[in-house]
Length: 182
Image (tube, rainbow, N blue to C red; front, side, top):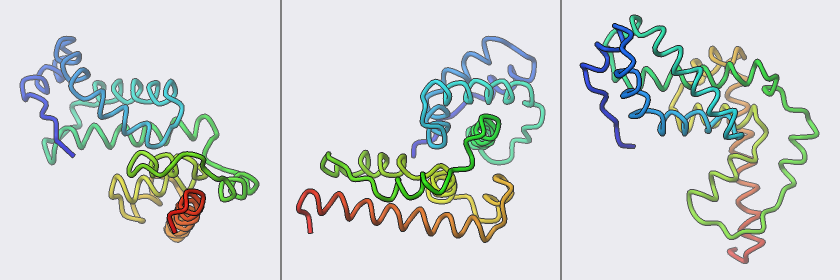
């Protein structure tokens, strides 16, 4: 994943509440941050709303940035937390058992096309599994960090990751069987 560099003078400008610096940082980081939010929120409008809220928090809390690690990484963490907070507020975090059962029974009509198809399969996971899977596999958070973020026991994080992987494997097998790839 290519790192995007935000100019140091833009960070200084953010600390001075400079609107041009805010625009420059937003224009530079928005595409990647929207993608980060969309890893957790499938609805584009809701993901964009979470990203906007995240940027407000970035601009408001810029004085807390300590220049430890990349600025982009700091912003990304804010976006992930904002996405999770957004989901909590919208009461999307708890999926019912029927959703889990339905999700595991879905079949797919399209042929498996590498990454984009796998992303579609991940998108079909029940929300609590998708969140843990994305935090662990994509964002590289530890189970301890995931547990803290989602306010769940560490064992629950591990279980959800296991179940997400199991469902993905079943879905991949279903797709492969449907297209005669076994």
